[in-house]
Image (cartoon, rainbow, N blue to C red; front, top):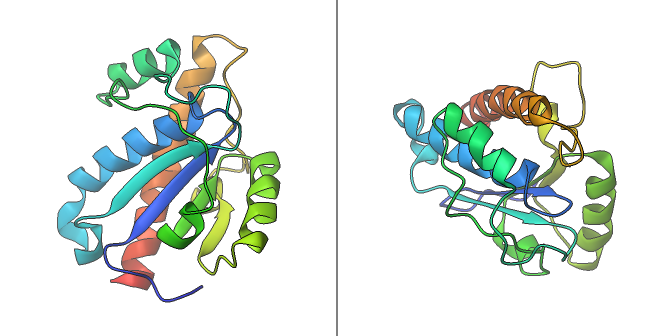
Amino acid sequence: MKSVKSPLSVLFVCLGNICRSPTAEAVFRQIIVNRMNEGSMLRDMIIDSAGTGAWHIGSQPDSRAIAAGRTRGYDLSSLRARQVSNQDFSQFDFILAMDNDNLRNLRNLSSLNNFRGHLGLFLDFSPSSETEVPDPYYGGSEGFDHVLDLIESASHGFIDYLIKTCD
């Protein structure tokens, strides 16, 4: 991985940027606030989310994601969907995909942009046996709760990793 810039930056990516990646952005942002005293690199972090697809650009996250997040104290309501851009590969130190399909798309884009940061799956930082954050879009509300469980776990694991390796 290239040397990490200051401030540290992370981009969470899913397909449409209305369920998983905005949830990851909001959850990670709040957990960073809660754990701010644990590492200097946590201050002033740049945290964002995007989708590999363009269907929902400018849209608010899915109402079920907003509601599920709200029940746990996370606010997704101000977030708006955007698509991954070429600039993201020069701006972010970490680009973390929610699943292998999006990771594959990001790898194709990263090779065109000479990305030298960390590109991988978000759940690589979780103790969960699951490797991908499943897309809850076509399911019920329980899928959004499961996504929150996975993202909370990976967020803590990722912060632990950052404290050990970047501070």
